[in-house]
Length: 265
Image (cartoon, rainbow, N blue to C red; front, side):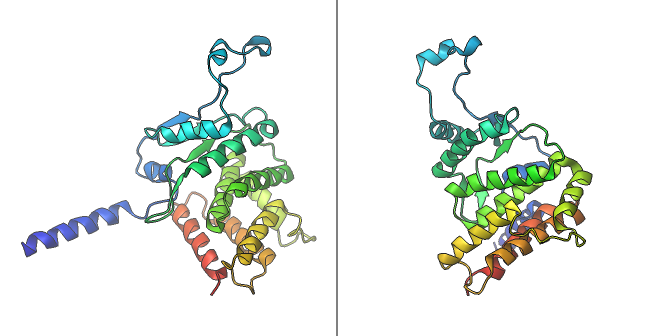
């Protein structure tokens, strides 16, 4: 019996070692294991017919709010992720509706918190190609982050969302243009201090300050400085670990240690 127990322990330990740590987004784990992933389109109301007239099926059912559509999405559990392409054509027009949809998902609960933070309905978004207008790109990241924090006031989740948005920009711009984007804002030779003008820094600093008011962040912490430190370190990791197999785990560890460094003692 003792031999069987030891074998069982060894087997469980071996499985855990092979699987490795789980990521916040389960799609990352599936891709890392070279497994297929299956997405489903985010539910939406029937499109308008020609000339703006309501589609025939639209006259037979009530138009749902983004929050109601979000609940429909949460009710479907057979896909690995939810896909939304509504911002591919008109980003600025579609963003408010998408933001309400994301609020509905957050309200319905998309994150399992035990034994660790983990998404169970990740969302993958397709937008139109971003031209190399780096100021506009930074503004759009900040705008999406602002929408996110309206419904999610957890500092850890906010920082992970900032990481997700910046990684998305890296994928859309490509490695070369992304490095140009970083150089534009964080080059050592840049003469002006734009820390208070960079929209992403301002948003992260505001959330750190909010957490500080709630007693979650040490009172001696300077929110603006901490936001700059966080984003500088993140950008440095992204540019120096591009295509590294362990980049995701390294970034998650970086976020965790950043939070530990500013938390209230």
